[in-house]
Amino acid sequence: MATDLDGTALRTDGTVSPRTAAAFAKVEDAGAMLVFVTGRPPRWMGGVAGALRHRGLAICANGALIYDLHTERIVESHLIDAEVLEEVVAQLRANVPELAFSVEYEGGFAHESDFPLGSWDRKAVQGLDAGCETLTGRPCAKLLALHPEMDPDTLHATVQGLVGHLVTATHSSGRSLIEMSAHGVTKATALATLAERHEIKASEVVAFGDMPNDLPMLSWAGTSYAVANAHPGVLAAVDHVTEANDDDGVARVLEELYR
Image (cartoon, rainbow, N blue to C red; front, side, top):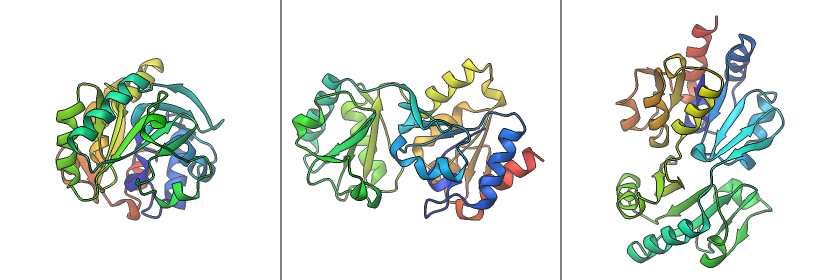
C-alpha cells in the first residue's frame, strides 16, 4: 500500500488523525508493506514518524530520497548533479527572471533571499540564505522554483519546455512552485524499484494521491485512488475516488481492505 501524505493521508493542518494512524497499523499488522510517497524532505518527517510509531518506509522528495521511518535515516538517494543543477537554474533564470530558487539537500536546505519560506522552513535552523552560486555548488535532491503570480499548471508547462530534458518537473502545493528532481526520478520510479526488490507486482499495489506529482505513481499502481479534494487532473486519472483528506478518505478504504 502506497500513499501520498499532504493533502491525501494527512489532515489539512498536517496532522495524522487517530483513525488514519489506526488504519496504517492494520496494514503492517496484516503483513503488507506500508510506503509513504511524498514530496516532503526527510527533515519534515519527524512528526509523521512519531505519530505513526515509526511504522513504514518513506519515499521522500518525489522519489529522490528513501527514508526509513523505523530508524529515521536516509537509506538511498538519487540526486541532481551540480553541473545539471547549474544549467537548469541558468536556463530558467534567463527565460523566467521572476523565479526565486531554493534547493533541498540530503541534510538541510538553502534558499535565495527572495524565496519566501513556508512556516516550517522559517523555523528550521539548518536553512541557508545563499546566492545562486552557492545553491548550485553541490548535488541536491530537489530544486524548487517559485513564481510570484503565474498559474501553477502554466508555470509547469513552461519549465517542462525549458529544462524537461535535464530534470523531472512537477508541482504539488497549489502555489506557483515547481519541484524538480533528477531526470527520470519520480514517485513511480522509486516505488517500482522498491516493489521489485520485495517481489511485489504493480498489479498488487494500491496507491492514493491528490496532486500532479502523484500521477506517475497512480498510473503505475494496479489500483489508484484520489481523495475528493484532489487536483482535477488527478480526479480524472484514477480508478476510484474516496472521501477528502479531512474526512479520513484513505483510512476508510484501508479499513475495508484490511478488515
